[in-house]
Image 1 (cartoon, rainbow, N blue to C red):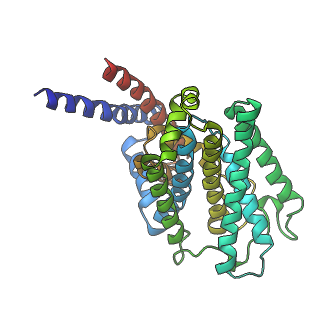
Image 2: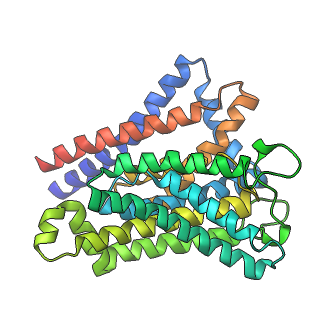
Image 3: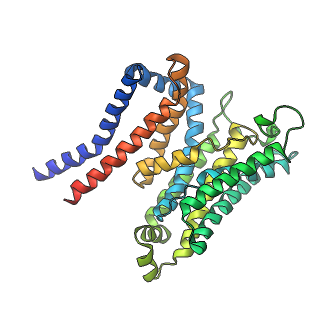
Length: 344
């Protein structure tokens, strides 16, 4: 009897955040004059209603799944890697640089090289934040935000300067890559099965690394108490550097996909806010890798489906972001309450 009560108590505490978030979302919709049922229906059909919408949703899912998997590594080590946006952007820059050097190459040779250089670029940019944190005692939040601004400025400089189009509008980005350097996608759709497979592979590798390796165990020890881990003989500095490098490589991989699958060029706002959404996904997952894929799919669906709100219900598409923010805040609040209840 006691066991069943405990189970029901844990279940109610787990479902409470979602129910509260849903209630607040409904109240917000009513307050803005939006019909709740129609809004939720349009969000769903706008993201899964057609094969094209499904493909667009999975394009976003690939980016969110990979970047959140990388962020989980640094978060496990107790590092708030806010600079992941810049790491995505630098990955895109490295990918574009590699593509420009292989303009005449076939995709079999060019695409893997582009991806590799993008991952190197993202890793190097993340390591700069780590070096400032470890050896310069600069908080990773400030260091990451600073490098985000630098990456953005450098990206714009390249688009308007050395990599400026010979013809056409500069704001649209650099010259379009040759089709040989586009990653293959499904016919008339933007989604690449290869990218989905790679995203699933990254999720599995990150899950197994954190769950069943000494490296993952040591990262968790650092995240719990870095001083105690150091005293016990854990090589804290090399491990933190490795965590940032892995996260940056994942961000660079996302940057590569954005230029060789989605845009086929480097554009000013290439990162699309995926880095910040990845942070929210990791927080909602409670640092559990198993939840990254479904949460990334939810955020991808809201991101794509929210465009239908403006087209069909005359509701500003930013409402999707509001709903995402409400969900995150409520879930984090309820998780804190849940921990206090369980501790008692």
